[in-house]
Length: 89
Image 1: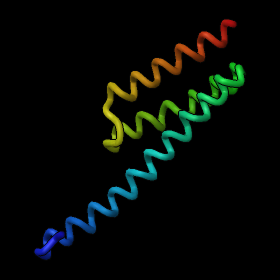
Image 2 (image 1 turned 90 degrees about the vertical axis):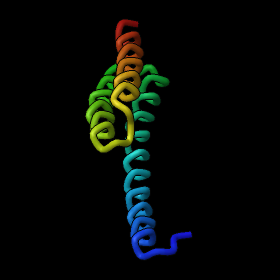
Image 3 (image 1 turned 45 degrees about the vertical axis):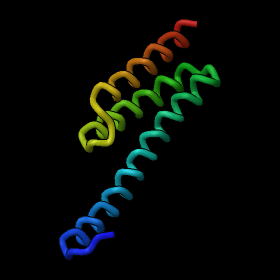
């Protein structure tokens, strides 16, 4: 438990930042889920549109410190390859 004034203040700040980060992470996951759902349905155009919407959200997560750059790139790459595969079929 925080005892000093400074540690109490830091605890309050961490609480606020945690809530913001949680909301951002949830928003990104929603965008990724939309891509996954479109892929599961086999709808190539919806999957492509969802991926185009998800990419900037993921990269914004990188700039905000939610995800590592390589993690976001890996997720985008894997989703893009799946969208491409479903487009060809």
